[in-house]
Length: 156
Image 1 (tube, rainbow, N blue to C red):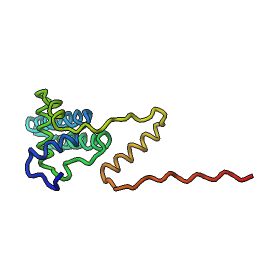
Image 2 (image 1 turned 90 degrees about the vertical axis):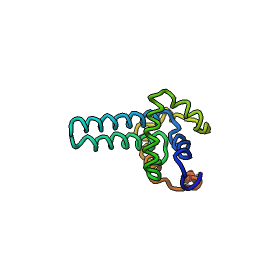
Image 3 (image 1 turned 180 degrees about the horizontal axis):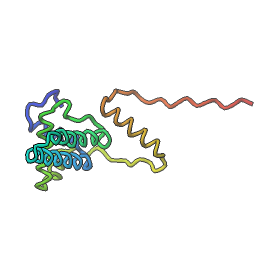
């Protein structure tokens, strides 16, 4: 990938790959749809807080999906206007029933979702989600993980 895209047409496949999981796309569509409804309600009612609620609904849901489902950094941080345009294009494709066709056309099929083991406790899952969120917000390059040293058994 080039450092900067030259056109939205170049950006669109990148955008879809950043939203490769169906649940991420569904959350984005719901958030964008809610934002549109809230902005329309703001125009009709004149309520000052509705545009702020629209931004929170749109970006809050999208960023949460990136942190916990997609586990990547939202494209909004690097490409804010094209990402916003991508949100509306994805909503249009969802409404017209062509989103899955677009995904098939542009998304790489090299990731397989693996469910978390059922034996993990609630606390372990929360800790894992917290770590994923931290990594998604500020990913760090990590080397290979070293196993924790095991205590030596007592000698007889």
